[in-house]
Image 1: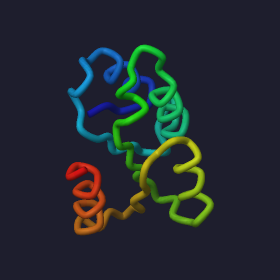
Image 2: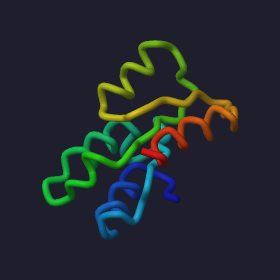
Image 3: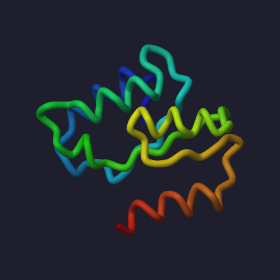
Length: 98
């Protein structure tokens, strides 16, 4: 768990591939927002797992354009806040069981 996008990127870069099964990415974070962080992870030249790890947006921004912005940034899915745990579990399960 990290508190900002820059720390999330650093933590991902400082772990061995396969450490994380999935990322829950807040959009509104200091240092780097969730879109920037996701793009950075997806474009890491020395971490091919960065292109594959499921990244799920978690945000209060729930309009169709917000979902599209998350997908355009490279996220795999979008879960709106306040979090409905049954929806979150369903989305996580969809990616973990692949």
